[in-house]
Image 1: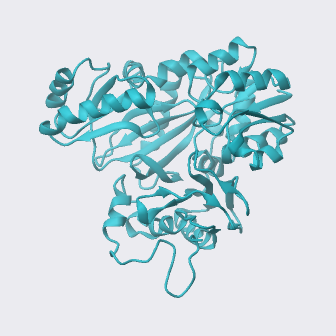
Image 2 (image 1 turned 180 degrees about the horizontal axis):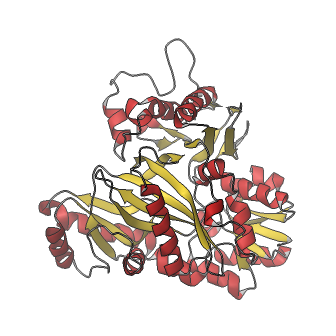
Length: 469
């Protein structure tokens, strides 16, 4: 096992990885921007290195500074967390060239699966079910329009280099196609430096279900069940749970088997996630692979008892998987809510500021992964995720009730600071969600049924706000 690891990230995931290091007897090197000098992980780490100013491109995305920090501190490996450089093949290759172990898949695999069209073609050859669409990037608007006309509308145009819910547009008819194609290619160039796009059938009432896999460098691969991530806004996940509710008999195992076959076909090593779309008729189709630890990994840990970050370290250190597929057992139900510092009443606009109050909920089977604390200044420069609230219970009904209670207890306050906790409580209480009959359109449906004069999410006339400052 490694003696010292550098964590090339910030926020809650940096602190979560640092804690895993402590449990494994690994010394922790944190990196931070000038904006994050007072962050929780900087205080927690054995060593901390400032790598640049607030803009991510000059700090958390600046590869030379991160590699130099690792070399200067004697770190043997780099854990990228999620986001930032976690799926950057060039970063993984630079780490390898500098004698650093990148805790993730090999750079060749990241490059292969990071290109969405290349990944689709590879999974098609591996026999995974696919939505109708292109297996290669499309060279012109005319070519893309002809394919869309052949598939039938609605379709979705996606950036080949995209990910994280960015770089895509839904087109409902041929009259809108040309403009959507121009906007998507231009946006892809801006976001990813790559204008290539592809087209596939769009399922307006789909569910988003993903499968967690682990694979070692010796060809062993397993899955650890599925997660339902259908509660989204603008393709960004808000609530995740495991196991996925109301799946037809045998479907979860078929999806798991497909993910393992896809991982083997790609030569995957490490922890990863295969994402699928589930149609109302029970059929499923491959969407993409995330070559990193997921934000929502705690729900899988809660139902399997497997520490996924520990497994990442063991795999990266060259160990074989200790688990076989028959060893994996799912117990009970877990739900995660992402608590963002955003205002749901203003289209989820970020509301950075100083936290004058921060009191997470507690009680049995409640987990809070966070970097927040009273006095913490939530910066405007980065993602607004402040905490992940995760609960477990023997069954889904119990998990829903526990999550409702935990969300009601969460206290977050600060001048101008709002959080999504109150709105998420509305989602958790929604009859469609409680029945497991929701899809990716649920958030819009919840907003549509709210009275225009409704109080701010999480408040009531009888008590003070639990989310407002």
